[in-house]
Length: 427
Ligand code: HAM
Figure 1: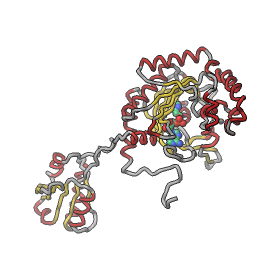
Figure 2: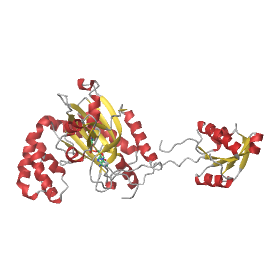
Figure 3: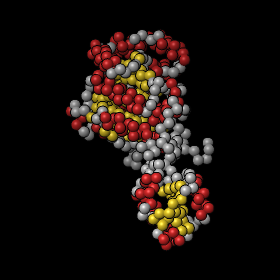
Figure 4: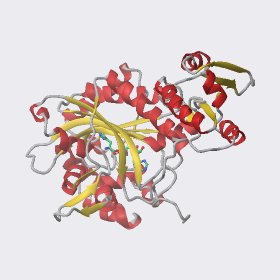
């Protein structure tokens, strides 16, 4: 481990990289607003039972991946491994349980103790959306349309949308019986995890990556035949509406998703540029039980991994970086001029002009070098003689052309001359 590395599976995001992150965040805010969604910010940690009850105790996330600790009062807290459960906990404080629809999105870090790999972090960042309080196939489809609109806005082409239905909670038992009957025949050939899953949560077998298990899974019977008419009709309508919205999709019966709250529609967007961790986004409809609520909260939503969005953009060679803003560099000759320049720098910045100024007594040569290093578009030189005359010398760094003008004229002159005066990076 290098001496100053952050913990495994986490990363520092330096100023050169943050514009790309801001670009994603701003695009999300812009697109989701068009669909009537507002930003919700919930705490980064919650009471542990919010995730246990919300996500399901038999999921990998809850069983193996949560960062859980005790607070001072001895109560168990957990860093959020995903956004949905916390968002639901927050929305219970509104009138959402009375059937009033809520539309929210969130952006921020999530934490899962997974084995770090390319595109898989222990602290990663999601942009997520939840539509809560109403159930209708049209809402599931609108969510998918919005997600595809967002990806399109980011220039991410070549995605594949996989969809499936998990049916209703009441469909689980008959469908599980079909799966148990089939997988029960192969107990000896399956991996240890799947043997356990046979008892604990048979659906998890369907997304096992073990090669021997995969062969068995490929020939599994269509469990959805055991689903109720209501579930099948719901899924038919989702597919019809997706077709009407010109969204390409592929039905994947093995797509069950790793979180236990899903009912009806589930989906995932995969991208070939991502390598082994090819899931760019995932979502679905859910019924989520939280502590102290007798009935479930219904919703539909999705989350997109920001690290994976950046990887997909890299694979597609999409550059979202605006040219860096070239500053103006103020050069002082003497102590008096330095004081004057500090003041002038304030004025220029307030006029929206990126400005750098040397605060210590340095030679003109050293200040010129610093101006070159900062790739300044203009340098402005001020010495005692200039101060007496009330002027400064403004020099274009590219051409070497110089102009004398009064300090009062300088902001307007620079605004006219400079190619970019405001920081536009990522915004
Ligand atoms: P998820 O499929 O667990 O769903 O995560 C969504 C996305 O987060 C993934 O497609 C991936 O891009 C990213 N992601 C997940 N784990 C990692 C990781 N360890 N490192 C990097 N990126 C990761 C959910 O979290 C659900 N809450 C989505 C949802 C919202 N369903 C309904 N509403």
